[in-house]
Amino acid sequence: MPDPCCSTMALTGDLWPRRRFVEVAAVTLLPWAAGPAPAAPDAQALLALSDAIRNPSQPFRVTVTLTEFEKGTQVNTTTLVSFARTLENGGQFASLMRFVQPVRDAGKVMLKNGSDLWFYDPGTKSAVRIAPQQRLIGQASNGDVVTVNFARDYQATLVAEEALQDGERRQRQTFKLRLAASSGDATYGAIELWVDSSSHAPLKARFFADSGRLLKTAYYRKFQAQLGADRPTETVIIDGIDPQSVTLVRLSDYGLRNVPTSWFQREYLPRFNAE
Image (cartoon, rainbow, N blue to C red):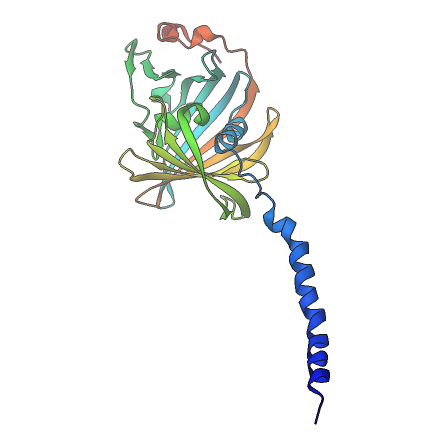
């Protein structure tokens, strides 16, 4: 009959290496398991970096062409020249936009300064206050074409890190931000914004009314080197209800421009004649 002592010793000897391995592995993994988790990126800082990609920090001009499509057919187009710069009050942008096309609108001007948005018609020589949410053409509102600092008007929260197919059908790793309006200047009640996790470029946005209703979805694409950064030169805006109603916003002819602060006053509109 086998010696019980020998059998016990054999069993113990067989288990020791495995038990010892588990103990060593646990000790080896313990510092990793107990170490601090990587800090989440600061959402407001990500939003500011995204703003810097959309908008040059120096005074600039750019041509904005908006084209409206219904079921794939072009139905309308408008071209404006935008002059923009930051003002002294907290990095807020002011914009002055002169209509070029269609001919019937040539010479008309739109001014954004703070919470004021004005429309000036040289034919009637009158300036009237307009709403940022008011449609300019297709899915593009007045507030979509003026230069906007999201980090000033919205409070950002990091919602998730996720993969996204961008406006050019490429897979990108992104940070998804939720933006809640924190300023009376904000055009929308809330925005969901996806920014590239490496470059911090804005890739996609969903815009919501105060009621929570989805108004539109925008894809930022065709990034090109313009005034010191790779900036989106096209934005595709899709209606929140009818996906066949699309507006394409093209930005071209970027250039630095000495834009005096005196231009951004309602009283200056009748004299504005910049080319």
